[in-house]
Amino acid sequence: MRKKLFPVSFSALLVLLLILNGCSQKNDTSFNQQIYNSIPESEGFQEIFHIEVINSGFLVFYRMDNELKVGIIDEELNWITKSGSASLNPEEGLSVVFSNRQEEALYFSYGVINNPDVVEVISSSERNEEKAKIIKTNEGVRLWFVFYEKPTESILPDIIGVSEEGQHLVNSNE
Image (cartoon, rainbow, N blue to C red; front, side, top):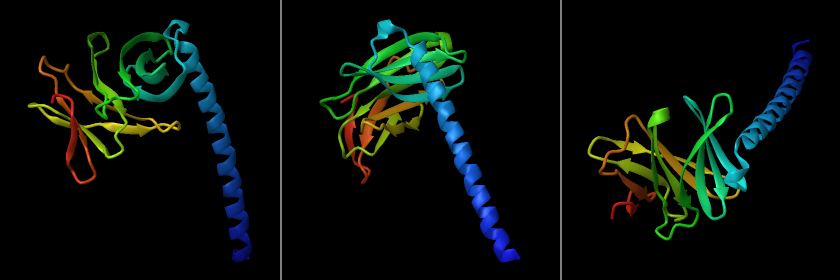
């Protein structure tokens, strides 16, 4: 009897997981549509690359022409503002934008990596060293971002693109 129960239980569990997975994809689509609807038409965005959850809402990384832009949307999905733009095809292999949003107490850097040898991005200053989060989009764009607890100072941190061997390939302040 135990042999018959296992295949039935396993099958029931598999069906349940497939149903739940289908429901979560529908919810994601609805949420993504709400984010799309929150971005003003005046922004002229072509596609959203990534949505990052933050304390006060969401950072939306999106493409407009040949640039990566970041928009800030609050918890109720209201557009707050945008924050600079980075080249999608930086000549140096790594684009860098610093953003100090005092109103939202949101301090971060972001950009695009197009040097295939860069596998890690580090933000380094006298105060500390932070490892950036790297996202590879479905379109193959590699974007990176790092958050800071305090505003970036008048002397900006070095943003360093690092190879698999640990070699510094790109430095934003050189």
